[in-house]
Length: 261
Image 1: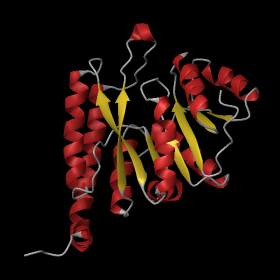
Image 2 (image 1 turned 60 degrees about the horizontal axis):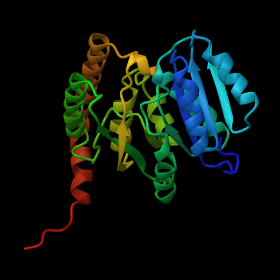
Image 3 (image 1 turned 45 degrees about the vertical axis):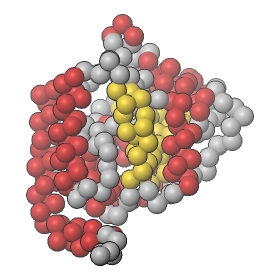
């Protein structure tokens, strides 16, 4: 742990976790080595991790663990953490998965980019290695294409990578206005709706590692269920996009530079 690092008063690191097993302890320790404070929200985990994480927090003032009694989904866990963070005075939150895929070493760089431009959302642009399942990589290209259309090319380079720094208040506002974004649809819908609200993205390269079962990797992604969820999400977003199109196009035209003959 990085005890020499003073706690940030504006930026908190938020890790939602659900039955990740021992890998979550490595993830939290790596995150604590890079940032203070770190909050973990266990989403109804039944694998014993909430108890051990709470023991870790008892010995570490820079770590807070919130154990939700029932599984509600990633987005719901993040929203719970965001609301507690806002109540504690934080303005921004970096979300990080608990399964070891996200690069803890880049936490300070992402936080610094957000601190330099707090009006933006700082998004990870995943850099895949040979461990990435080809089907997952191709699938996210489809989601990225739809996201680019739905935001009229606002500059979101990746719609699914959950290693990001969000402004807390705008994200809570868009989540509270509708009932979605509570499960795997959270990451994509968050950037689309924030972009509609005028929050500009900053994209930073970040390596992503898909861990095998032998390496302690745990995935709760279901190809059928979650791809259907994403398809329904983009259907909803496209319907709303059509209604918003005149306003979005007008905003986009206002940002264009004047014509130079």
